[in-house]
Image (cartoon, rainbow, N blue to C red; front, side, top):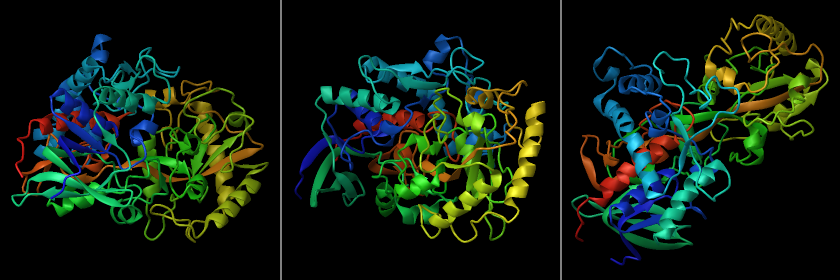
Length: 551
């Protein structure tokens, strides 16, 4: 057999998990080769907000913030497996493997970040607040309102390498790329791995590669670590495996689920395929970009504005607009028999919100004053707004997105305007009292902090009465995914497991290409990248100590 490349540890991918694995393996003294399917390294992490959620990290402890182990595990277990979580049960009600993964994340997370810092591959800071937090240290965690969350400040970190400027995700990945390149670690781009090479006894000893139409092979003397991202760009997989109707994704286009197919062919156990990390997006932008949404101005991470509401096709509010995006986006998944009333939602705001001049990172689909992207609808009356929305829906009808479409049932209810008037009247009453009796909007510190600027005269910063007259604005929203988070099941060291729990020799995985240790949960800002860094590092370290596989 001809080998075109050779290394002790071959790492597939070049995003956060892959780069952390590479740093760990290099530090252990072995040779490393990274193979990246895309034209440049960095992966989805490089275009992200660059945050990473690490419980009990040393930076928060230095600020006097304690994050007790049991409480943190309870929080993660409740968010990851809400239908299993039992605080009084053994392993908090979780199967042992799932519990062990959460425990390993808590036990090793801070040490991994400290080691990456000591090596000079990361330069972490506590991700700062944006001006409306009760704490001077940071914004509260997304789930600060849960009783299990006794330490809602300081878990979210960012990377601030000296002398490097750019988007936060770029700063995260580039500092590790620079560290690897300074040590002459090859990162070969446009190298898509399409298969694994096994010995007769099942050991993985290399990978098959496609590179500009040619087939190549890379030998891994010790192990292969896959960190290739999810399958958000594989429409067949998204349609067949994801539990919700999705209109688009923010992940890089190389995420087609290659490792899912490769690992399954090797006999790996597979899990968590129905879950992802969700957000809301402007579906007209998704249509224009073939489902690949890179414009952060078309993503509703937050629902900006104190007099902004979300309604379904009946003109009724259907969710707490200020909930964390991962939770809020799942309101689109509601199915009532053959109907999906929340399949698309309409974010509606008034002129006061439109003219609010504050530069705020979570304005999302609400543009700065003086600009009007094509996916924003404007009308002088509510009836005219409804007519314009219906016309936009008709223009989108028949198009197919990641795993959804604007089908015939996606049409405004004949009573939409009447219902919308009643909805706004009821909302305005809640805004006057500061108490949302329908969805408890603004009941948590997170919601009030992420509100940003507010005109409210109550203790609830998230609500102000909507204007009785226009103009009004709207965006058509659908559910999207930052990425999927299902695939081969791994142990606490990243080794890929068979259904009987035994490991596949020489095969490791980390990041969004595996069955996420977070299950269905999104623990907080950076809830994807935190586990990717930690379990990527642990996988790389373990892979470096695998015995050399003789051919």
